[in-house]
Image (cartoon, rainbow over all chains, first blue to last red; front, side, top):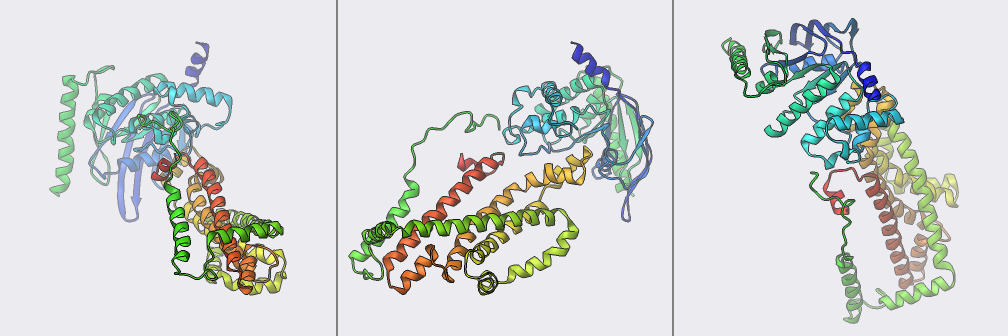
Length: 261
Length: 268
């Protein structure tokens, strides 16, 4: 398929670099100095105690919050503020309820009314398995379908960096596993550099190349775990289970060091 | 949920229910019955056939149609002018904080004036022809639309705006593609309230020196003690008010089909 080959060639995955990121809300320091290098097409999970600033970090990268110290670079380009190279999937689907699914997916495309946009949209809907729901209204979708649509909306602009903030946390366990596999399928097709926040340790070790553990507020990198097994992975792989236990212990340590003072 | 059969997928065949007609028929029976039982004298409350005869007689003289057209035209013109102004001003105030701060206190003060109090001034300024009547209707339609639209714009979910910001959309694009569609339900609430107000105000406007119209017919018949004609005017107002509301409701149901609320389910 010549079209698809051309499509592939357009995507240039790019490394993401966070250097000396600090963030305060008034007197409270939320992020206390974070340096992370994410390689091109790498998948990185960010975990940490709740309220530690994981989501805040993602908001800084996505450009929704520009008030911070430090530098964020995509490739060799420093960014601060929304950038077309970045795609975001939020915790909730956040679909526009008045737009049919195809129009929702096309929302972020610059030429969202054009024929090429329509072709791109239906292709992306196919990737997330929603091809036959192009004309459905968001209210007609289940929670899992809506979140897949949100993923499609982020993918359709072919972002070099894809950010996901606890994307599957409101879904049941079965749907969540299905969507994790669908995310991996989409990733292997578009190969974005992917950073996701999660509180689900199974999800972290199943999806990620590296899991970054943040400390309690103000957030710093407390630990980095490399997940070795090649994809496709088996969820019952003892290596993954071992990593999960290690993460759980590290998280517990993080929390008790705070509680213990 | 997808499993839910939507109205579009499976056209529902249902006999037109008699339920909405139950109450009007009961009222008609009560009306007729109370005269038969001597609760009211016929000069206070004429029985339905007498009212019907009066309507036919008025129609024969060509006056009924003239009244209806005069009143309806005033409502249409006033409603159109008032709502247009409210939509323009409401959009600007809702979207711009500085315009809001400049305009809002004054509008609130104007709103505090009972609208009837405008009538003498409007007569003085605009004469006794159509302009003061249409202006009064426009004032009546303006405020509900304005207030609801501004509330709707300010109530738009910030999370949806963030989605647009992530894609780098500017302020005007966000306003056009997110804020305005999202506040459409509030706009319709305002439009329907504004329409009700328009009918109320047109009657009031016609109390002050009109030569046609259903409001004029009411006062004129009162002065000549024609209770039957007063009832003709009242029934006409009820039917016209209900009919225009139904039109607006139908437009609303079409425009807001995407809403996931109890109302849309009832309408389908």
